Amino acid sequence: MRNFQVTTIWGIPIKINISLLVFLPVLAWLIGSGTQIETYAGIVGALAGTELDLSVLRAGTTPWLIGTLAAVGLFVSVTLHELGHAWAAMRYDLEVESITLWILGGLASFKQLPREWNREFTIAVAGPITSILTGVVCYAGLFVLPDSAAVALFVVGWLAVTNIVLAVFNMLPAFPMDGGRVLRALLARSRPYASATRIAARVGTYFAILFAVFGVLSFSPLLLLLALFIYGAASGESRTVALADLLSGLTVGDIARSTRLTVEADATVEELVDRMFVERATEFTVTRGGEVVGVVTVADFKTLSKAQREADTVADLMVTDLPRLAADMSAFDALVELDTGRASAALVESPDGTHVVSREDFSAAMEMRRLTEADGPF
Picture 1 (cartoon, rainbow, N blue to C red):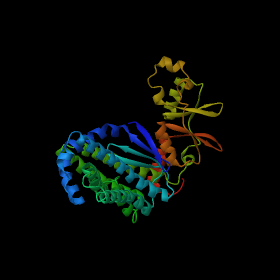
Picture 2 (picture 1 turned 180 degrees about the horizontal axis):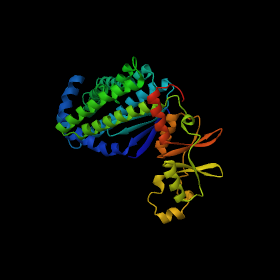
Picture 3 (picture 1 turned 90 degrees about the horizontal axis):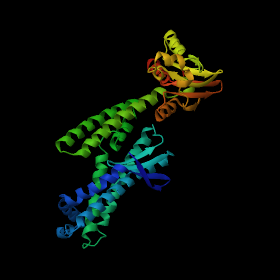
Picture 4 (picture 1 turned 30 degrees about the vertical axis):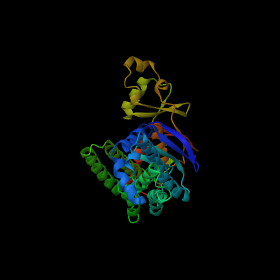
């Protein structure tokens, strides 16, 4: 869903997802029209050492004002929470690409996550610590505001309680939530990073199932959405780390094959089909005058009739808008480039010419790593 940039802090773009714009009025209504005012009035009154007048909090449009201020304050608190993560990451010279606020809270996007357990631990706990500090500041604010400011007392007190709850909830070991990342960091002290990730992700999926069960029993769409997010994110990051581990130390030049089956761009598609049967291959590099100009696969012509195959040339079907990658680019970054561009192959520029690397090449390289457990290029 679309994101809108609203400001920049420390050079980090702060974005709002459209889901939040839809959810904020709903959250304001839930806070202002439900039983939260009665429930939290007693809690805030006890914290502030005074009694809040419910008739004032319930008068006219005041509940809507309370709900709106509390909802906006909550997402300001979430922003501070994510800035806590960002500040800790920047201490290690890690680049923070953006902070996005959405229906389930906030997401700080890092260009690269650290694999050192102590760095990940510090970055993970920085968010909850920031939430606790925000809660403490809000709690101190209760003693600055006059007793007559019932609305301000309620909102500030509600934010004090909510920030502490936010910190505690985020420390649940439901990877990739903060507590799950703390768990991975602690596991990574004594085992490989990929293994620590698999264990943390497995714990995260258990929590996702637990959230889903509670979501169904309590008729809570947000818990169900959170369960889906945790399950998908935990599984996705586990796979990503496993891929990065298998491709570590390799460049795309190591994976790209310098000798591949080639076909001339001027050859007919029927000639290509005959070559595929003879060579038992489904993918060819297309050349023109010795230069690589594209890639053609069986999927590019399987819908053509025999007459079209005889009339059309390989140049009519080949894919030419392939990403061009430097041979010294890391293999994992190259695979990400393919995924981002939704490309099946890429052209690799190396000193000895242009080569092609395909997804099959990456699969073969990873399978080789699994079998040999090699540490370096093969």
